[in-house]
Image 1: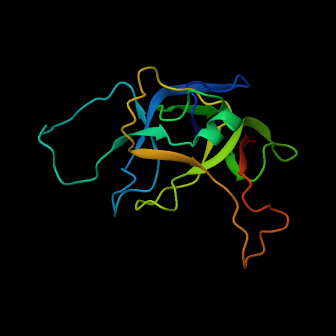
Image 2: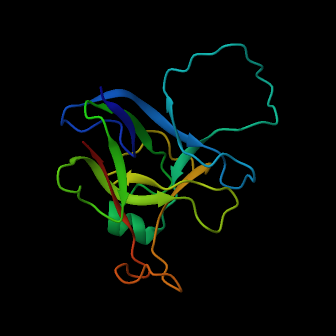
Image 3: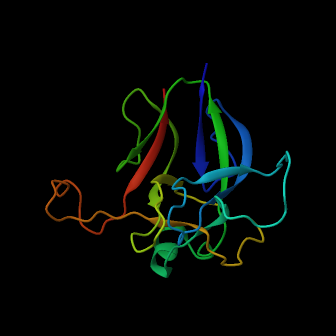
Amino acid sequence: MGTTYTRWGKSTCQTNGTELVYSGLTAGSHFTHTGAAANYLCLTKSPLWNKYDDAEQNGANVYGAEYELDYRSTQYFFGPGIAGQDPPCAVCRTRRSSVMMIPGRNQCLDGWTLEYHGYLSGGSYTQTAATEFVCLDAEPEVILGGSANNNGKLFYLSEVRCGSSSLCPPYINGRELTCVVCSR
C-alpha cells in the first residue's frame, strides 16, 4: 500500500516514513507556446531511450523550468539568489494510502500527516501557455549550474484576486496563497 507525490523545489523527501523514489529535474512546456501541455514534469536524471531521431521535430517540446520570481518575492519569501534558478523536484512515496494538496493552508487537517508546505505556484496569467497549480516548497533549493535564465516552464507565486466572487472574505486581495501536502 502507499501512494506517491511530487515535492516541487526540493530534491529530498520528508523523514516521516516517506521514501525518495527519485530526485529529478523540473520541466514542462514553454511558457509562450499555445497548445502546450499544462502540467509540470519531474524528469529523472537517468533517462533511457528507445528509438530516436536527434533532428528537432514539431511536437510536444519539453523545456527546463525556472523560478520566475520578482525581486520582492525572492527577498521576502525565499531570500536572495533564487530568481532565475532552476528548481529540482523529488518523487516521494509514502506508506499512507492518500495524499492531497490543500491550497490556502500551511497546516494539515486533523488526522493527516504533513509531507511539506509552501506557496501555491503556477504560470503567469499574462503568458500564453496554460499551467497547473502546484505546491512549491517553502524552502526551495536550486540546481547547481542552473542559472542561465533560459525560461521554459516557469514558477510564479499565486495571489488572490477579489472581485465579484465569494472568495473575499475570508481571502485577502493580493495576498500570496500558501499550500500544504498531506497524507493519511
